[in-house]
Amino acid sequence: MFRVGSLKSYNCEQCGNDFVSRTALRYHFRAKHLGKVHCEKCGREVLRETLQDHEAANHERMTAEKQGCFWDMPPKREAKFVAMEMSTSCRMCPRQFGTIHSREHHEKQDHRFTASKRAQMATGLSPGNILDYKNPTELKRFVEEMLRPIPGPASIACATEIEAVINLLKECFPLPVARLIKGGSYIKGTDTQGWSDVDIVLFSEAFENLEDCKKKLPEVINDLGKRLKKSSWASRFGS
Image (tube, rainbow, N blue to C red; front, side, top):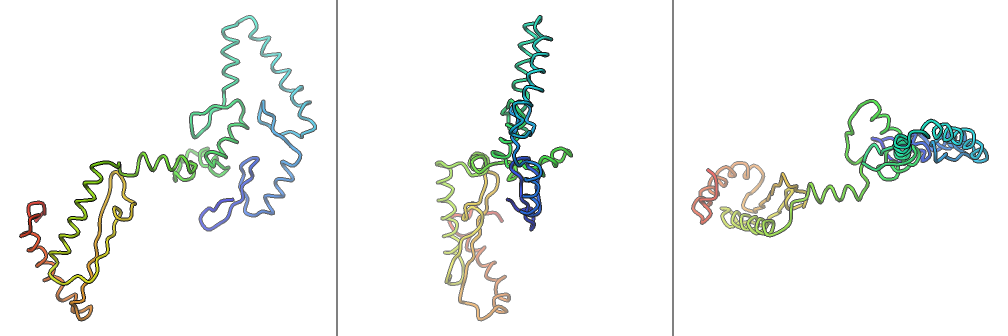
C-alpha cells in the first residue's frame, strides 16, 4: 500500500495494478490470480494444474520450430537463442532478464514500479519524482555522492570560519545580546554541494517593545556596519 496525495492506493503484487480499496483488491485477486502461476518462459499467468499442458502446447512446439529454422545456420542460430534468452531489460536500470515476469518482479521489488508508473511511462511522461523510482539504498547512495558536501580539510576550515564570523557579529552588535540562535541549511545539515546558507538571530532586551525595536533598528544596523568596518575583518566584508 502507498499514498498518492491524500488518497490511499492498494497495489496488486501479481500484476502491479492499483485499487482504491482492500475489497476491490481482494475481488481482483480472486477473479484474476487465484490458483494461477506465471509461466517462466513467456510470463503469462495460467492455472497451476494446466502449466505443464501450456508449456507443452506452446513452448515445446515453438522451440522445435525455431531449432528447425536455424539448424542449418549455426552462427545465426546461436545469435538468435542468445537474443531470445536475454531479450527483456529493466526499464529503470541496465539489468536484463529472461522473461517479462522476472523483469516486472524486479521492477516492483527494487524500483517500486507499479501499474500507475508503467502507465505514466507508456504515455511518454518523464518521472516527476526520483522517490518513485529509487529504493532506500539507491537514494542514500545518491544523496551521499551527489548532494552532501564533500568532507575533508576544506569542510573543517569552512566550519571554523563560520563560527568566527558568528562570534564577530555577536561582539560587534551595538546592544547587549541576550540570546543567539543559529540556523540555515549549513547549521541544519541540509546544505548541498551547490548551495549552503547560514542564518543567525540575535535577541536583545534593550528594546521596550516591538514599536521601540522598529524605531531603533535602522540605527542599530548602521552602527553594526561601522563596527564591522573597523574590525580586523574589515577587508573581508563588502560595502
